[in-house]
Every structure is written in C-alpha cells, then in structure tokens.
Image (tube, rainbow over all chains, first blue to last red; front, side):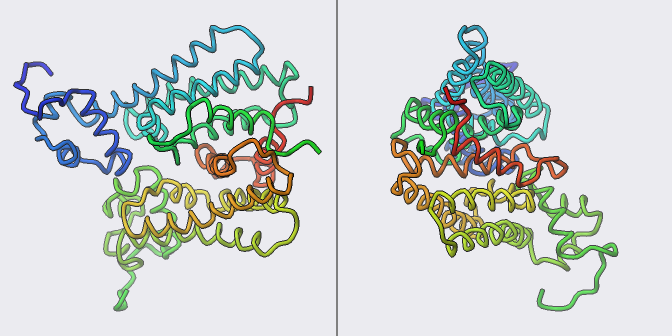
Length: 199
Length: 199
C-alpha cells in the first residue's frame, strides 16, 4: 500500500486473518478458480477492505506460500547445520517437515498444489526444489554409508519419501488427534523399517 | 447430444482426443480455472466443435474421472476375487494401482485433485473412497494374520500406502523411463521391507 487507507473491515481483521481465510478458499476452489469476490464473501468484508491489507490476490498467494516455505526452509537449515549420520539427519528432516506440515497445514496444502502458472508460483517451486534436493542428497549419503539399502534408485526413493510425507495433507484435518510426533513415528516406521513383520 | 450436429472440428478430433487435450489443460490450470475458451484454444477448434462431442465442461470432467476410476475399480475387483494371503493381495493391489496410474497418468492426476466442488466431483470421491476402504481392509487383515506389524494404526498406514502410490503423479512424466513394474518394485520395497539395511 502506498497511501494510508482508513480501515473499513470488521474489527479484528488483519493481514493474518485475511490470509488464513483466503488460503482456505484457495484450497477449496483452487487459486485460479478463486476471485476477490469469493474472498470478500468468505471474509464478510468488502473488496476494498481486502485491498487495504494486500495489493492483489497474487500477493495473498505469495504470503501464503512464504508461510509454508519459510517453515520448511528453517527445518532444512537446521538439518544442514547438524552433525550425525546421514540416515539420522534424514529421519530428523522428515520429522521436522511433518511438524511444519501439521502446524501450517493449509499453507503447505496450498504449496503442494502450485503448478508454476505465474512468477510467484515458479519462485515457490524453485524454493521447494532446493529442499527436495537436500532429501535426495541425504538419501544418497545414507546409501553410501551403508545405512540404507542400495538396490533402489535414490532419486526415486527421495521422491517417494517426500511424496509420503506430503500425502498427509490429503487427509489430515486441523482437528486430527494425531500429533506431529505420532505421524513422524508412523511415517518413519513405514519407510525405514517397513511394514512386514520379521519372518 | 440430442440432435446430430455437423462435424466442424479439424479432421481427427473425436471424443477421446478432445478429452485427452482437455485433461491436459485441467491439470495445468485447474478444472475451475479452465474455460471452454481455454479448451478451444488448446484444441485449435471452435467451442461449437467441442460441444459437438460433449455437452459441457462438466461432462469432460465426468468422462475423464471415469477413465481413472474404472481402471482402479477393475484392479480392486480383481484383488477382491483373488485368493491368497491378505499381504499378497495388498501388494498386488498396490502394483495394479501403479499400473493404472502409469497407463492413465493424466486422468489419475486429475482424479487426485478433485475436492468435491460439484456432484460429479462428489461422485468421483465416493468411488475413490470405496477403493481406499479395500486397502484399509487388506491392511487390517494382514495385521491380523501377523504378516504386517501391529504397532502402527492400520487406518493411517493405509492412507500412507495410497498416499505414497498417488504421490507418483507429482513427478512421473509420460516420458519417464520407469515402467510400472519398476515403480511397483521401489514402492513395495520401501513400504513392505523398509529402507534400512539389516544391522
């Protein structure tokens, strides 16, 4: 905003609440299928009140994707600067990513639906790819250490790992009883140790 | 179509080719974000030519989702009528589902993005849920048989299983070198036996 504008929204609306409601609608209708009218109807405020907080629908998208990406990037930075065997850092990255996903579920859900239809989306995809590369590097290092099996393509394994984590967004509800720690146990239990009982 | 209409499209356009091109655009722009104008531009034919083949954009969606669902339902029916331990039928269902996903990639991709915004979408979700329930039942049966570990919630495990399979749509390209059999080996290798080497 270049000029101060008198607040006309309902009391209590700020950028964070406009963002939260907008992300809900984006996830329900798709970003491209959502108009400022849709957001105005959901928020119960006029479009001009929304424009008081953000310049455009695309700015809402950028802010929302940033919520997801900064969380995931912080997790990645923590893992990069930590010591220990690659397999342990990989497990920690999966668990941290699941925490971010649980804490910022609507934002991560939106991020995972981005297809690169605009500069904002392409920048988000580029940031996401850098995190994905860290997973691939850790898988390769852990295979090299002999900690993970070497008969499976590490690039495919890495994709399956974040695919499995990301698939949580498909069914997890903000009201789900599972904690991030519970979900980390199940995901890591499946992918590291497998479902089959010892025979 | 209730009345015969003179074909006005380019030679070679039939329902299948209109459908294939439409699904590409739906996957790129989102179904709600796609207009008949977008489809007309992609196909290089007038809107009236599209209406010669289908009554509406929604009919294209219904036909496209049906392509994915009939494939997955056939796989489910095959597994339901097969004998053998639950763990083997579960593995076969994952492998068959991966085959359908590889063979009908754009259609399955579209199916997985459906959120229930219309009757057509809700019917597709209901059909998808019936297949998902079969996975859950097989996981529970295999846990009961002692073939799969019992310390993880079978409902969460089932969701992770189809989440892992479905995540293939996020990166698989029609030009990918991996065959359905290769991908089935990696997915089943990870989820049944785990990534960790024996220690």
